[in-house]
Length: 89
Image: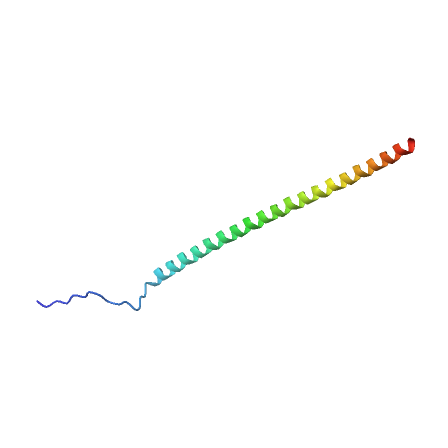
């Protein structure tokens, strides 16, 4: 009885069937497309958040401008009333 036992071997060239290669390529392409879609959605989300933040800041600054304008109008009216009152005395 003479038998050989192979304990370890190095595989250097693996060549699967063409259908298997095509299937693996399709799986990898699908995975990349899924990742790209995820990154694109995340970028769109970030873009919308930044636009909303900019809009909020613009509205805040606009409100400050309106408040200062009203304050200036009231101050001017107070000056006019004080000046008019002093002319009557």
